Image 1 (spheres, rainbow, N blue to C red):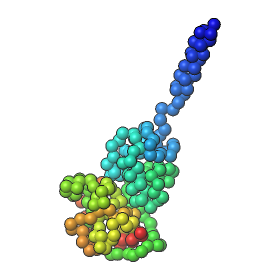
Image 2 (image 1 turned 120 degrees about the horizontal axis):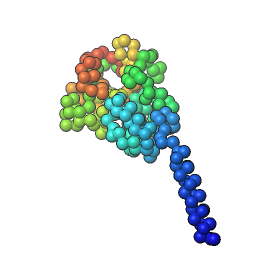
Image 3 (image 1 turned 45 degrees about the vertical axis):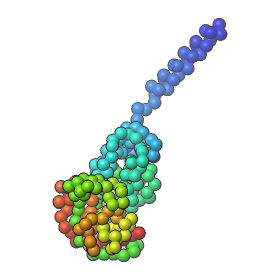
Image 4 (image 1 turned 180 degrees about the vertical axis):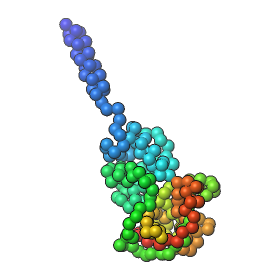
Length: 211
């Protein structure tokens, strides 16, 4: 009798486990839950794909590891929001913005350390524009939208900036790169592709150094 009870009990546990697994959702969609380092799933894959659309060059493996965290932090810094590496609602809204661009229309920041008149060009990751350094900046981070190359004597590396274009639009950026031709009041703005860099051409901008 005891053996029969054990069999019945085991069968019951298996049945409960089977029902529980069957009821469990397959995966959350991007935006359904906050994403943090250590998580994995389809929503993380969607996050990585969206970041790649913006030029961050990630492996789409569905695992929120150190590389994905670095990309999220860089995106948050470029967007001038709290950089904590966690993809919450504020980050989701900016990631899912269909404009897919770091450029937005708005007024210049009220608080800044200095403002400079700058000649701006653009470049892209890879050997075409960055030679032997490929996708890496001078500081060892990934070249991505929001990164700018600077002359450190004019704009210190690590500085956060706001770039205001002639048409009134602007973008936030971070100085993480240098360049042989970037001397004095010049910057090079990272783009997602060589074609986008060519489209940018040469422009006169104002750069507000924030920190």
